[in-house]
Image (cartoon, rainbow, N blue to C red; front, side, top):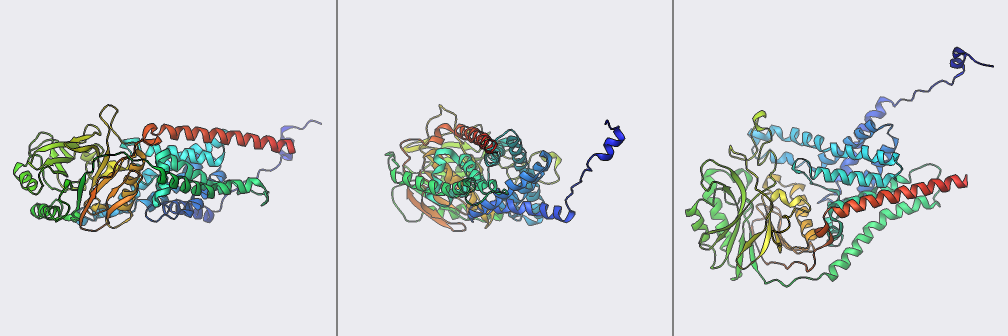
Length: 536
């Protein structure tokens, strides 16, 4: 018997419209940022690593329940919002240095920056669901998509690779060694893969004896153990080059940020650094190192002041100091740079380096003519970027690569081939604007990871801390903590004989890791489905 269209409609099953109660929806929207904040608690200096399992497994489960790519993107954005609010809250402190002029911008700036950066986890969430639909495993898809989004975040619009997930392993020298092999992005990929594994077994109908439950959980806990053991083996078997011993002194002046650019404080600041530089110590010091913009004037063009500072240097010694530099060679109008100067005992400027990667809103103001406020640092002029990263060669000193403040957080930040090989890294910075917060600790651990990636020692001079001497394995051999005032005397550690794998290949190895993870997860998923069909 044939049925007409009215009869078909009558006997058709009624559709059930499922909807989420408004209270449950709001609870979900508030809970997702908490998962992101939980992941941020694993970063320096807290290192609450178990929270990674909660955060990324929870994110995987939420994405599995999302009905479309738009909803997945919203979940990823909320997760990222919580992650960045918890990890970057300290940015608000920088606006309190000049509270009368900039204080009102503190919270809006943190919220706006976090909302913008959350777009990258949103992209990762969407990409992970696309990969799952194409047949790849859930954990591998999330890990690869998250790593790709971190790489984009570190590249787009000059990049901001602060608080990469791979930085959670800087809590110990042994676990940090993974950066020599795969860098922070590779460590992040493996970390998210391991942390999301518990979420893959959260399915109904699987008993505790099923290997599909225990194998992924085992991988979550085996990975940190393998990382630590392999790192310890590397620490015990490292081979160092034989460089001539160079004695150096790092001065941490601890000048409050609110006083640094006050004209009335200029002479007192210089006297402060000169006093600590002239303290009794080893007589064979060859390098005296002051932090970023330690001298609040254009020292390169101020011959009289340069001679006064050079008078404290022993014969043959060199001062490396952060200072303002005018590219036209005068103190008048022109391009102004945040620079590192090398000054001899004869008051000669032996070399200079201009910071290439400038910090938005602090050193220059994007779209400044359209904004109702000025940059947070003093002065009407924006800093101008340098041409490119470079190597500084000085008499009787191994060649080194300077990293001014912000530049130390970029993986694989090195000169183009053909410019010579650095034997050590120098990071001068002024973290006083970060306040007493997690910010300076995070910045220090990022700089420390650069030493491991390149197999080069790192010398770090920070105005308010953390100043340190770090060997090419990331071990801290000398340190001045946050808020201390004083000097740090040390010999320059030697570099490793062989450049680590990541130092040679860069992020190509991370790309290979991502492709392998997706292919393996795709094959395993197909084999699992085939086995299930065969049994049934």
